[in-house]
Image 1 (cartoon, rainbow, N blue to C red):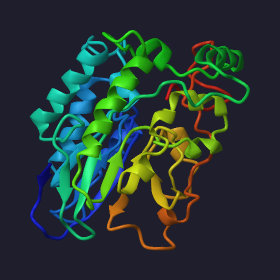
Image 2 (spheres, rainbow, N blue to C red; image 1 turned 120 degrees about the vertical axis):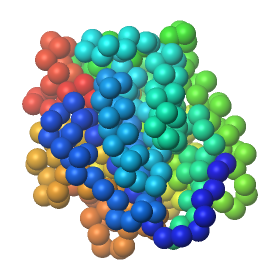
Image 3 (cartoon, rainbow, N blue to C red; image 1 turned 120 degrees about the horizontal axis):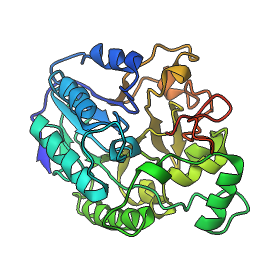
Length: 318
C-alpha cells in the first residue's frame, strides 16, 4: 500500500462517463475538484477507445491530486472504431500501462491510503468481471439464462465485443480475478477500513430495480456476495447500472455513481456529472444519502437482437 500525508480534501467518485457522447465529454471538461487535495475514483466505462480513455483520465489526473481507475466492460471491448485491436488480457494490460503513464492508480498497483478527513481509509480499485451467476428467475445454468435473455432481446454487447483471451471464457477470467483480488484484500492491515471500487456491484441487491432483470447476468458474481461483511468495508463504489443511488446492505454503504447516457441523465432532476463524495460521507438528507437516488430504473445495459442498440427506447449496449 502507499500512503499520503494527512491534510484536507475529499474523496469523490464517478463512473460511466461514456465520453463517446459529446454531451458527456463536455461534462468531463467541466469536472474540477473543490480543493488541491481532492481524490477522484473512476469506476469504469470511461469510453470504448484507448485515445478517449487517455484523454478523459489524463484530463482528470491533471486536476485531482490522485485519480483511481477500475475498468468497466466498455474499456475492455475490442471495438471496431478503436485503432487498438488488442483483446482480453492484452487489452487490459495495455490500459494499465496507459494509466501508469498518466499517473492513474489501477487494480494492479498498491492500494493507496486516504489520510485526509474521514481517514485513514485504504482505496482498492478492483477488476473482477462477472460469471453469469446472477441468473434470471427460473434459470439454473448460464446456458438457460442466455437462452432466456436472447428470447427477450436483452443481451449485453459484451457477447460480441468483450473477449477473454487467453482465458476460455469470461467466467474463467472472472474466477481468476476474484481469487487474486481476494488474496490481496485479505492482506490489508487489521482495523483499516477500505473503499472497494469496482465497475459492478459486489452484491446482487442493486440489480433488483432493473427494468430488464435478465441483464443482471452481466452485472457481477455471487463469489463476492459476502465481501462487504468479510472485509472491513467503508463503502462499496460501483457503476454499470446507470441508476445512481445509495443503498445499504448489512449496514454497509453501496454507492452507484454513474453518469450514464445523455438520454438517461436528461430525465433526472439533478444536474448531470455530479461527483459523489465518498470520504467523508455525504451529509444525511442529501440526495446521495437517501437510498433512492435519481435513477429511472431503466438500467438495461443491453442491445436488441436486431443490433439496433436499444430495447424499448433504452439500453445501448452497456
